[in-house]
Image 1: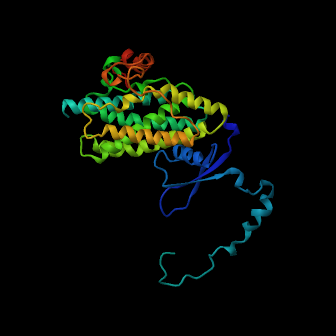
Image 2: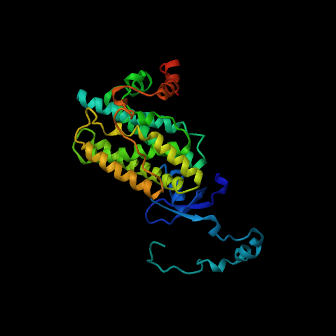
Image 3: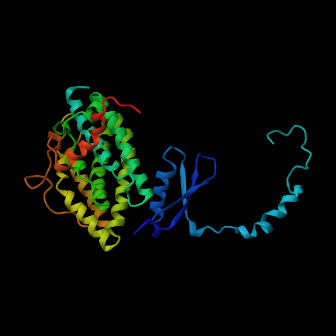
Length: 95
Length: 239
């Protein structure tokens, strides 16, 4: 059996408590348990994380580059969707 | 450090140093890239332990690179050649289970090795888990992986008895209970992996083991020659 037979896994690492898991990369592993251990060795060996998720790459549904125009471009010229047109009352802090 | 504790540090330090070198030999040769990194990580953990232990005895470089074979006090198990991946995993399972139980006992005591053992046992927990995961998958994998894993376990069995001889200077260890716990733990993993606990004595005339007295097996000389070659050819070389 070679690595090419092994499924691909996407690795998400949470670097600190309170932050969300961030995509760190991908790896090959025979199953989820081994994927988790490989991820520990590959992506957290310099103390980069406190928690790891592994997800089979086949479980990820991705947007298609062909649909890029219809998916993302229409949002480009609609600045009114950004919450920048509000008067911020005096005295409001931490915004 | 009393002379007796020093002898204990040498034995534990040599175990870690020699196994670290053996695992390092897998670098660039492991079945998959991910496993290459995993084995190198384990090797580096062991090298870190070896450095602390050998520093208690003397100059770590001199001890690692300038001693003759007969002056090493490691178990014969750890100096055995890597063989195939199953063979190396069998060696990892036997040794890391032993090291986890031994360091667990040392960490719980108040001896000179307690602080070091408390830190190292977390690393060793992972080494044992790594060996267990692979033993389960190779044992309960294909017919070939099962056969190779069993062959590795059988071939190394005769080196396991030596682990439970009391080590001079390593005090506060119940070696009998260590042996019992080791056998229970290894047997449980092998059973789940559909493998057979090897038969045959672990000690006595048939078995091997006098590494703690400085007697080593044939592959060790070749390993040392490679490990020490650079330092001996270029004394004092630095990066």
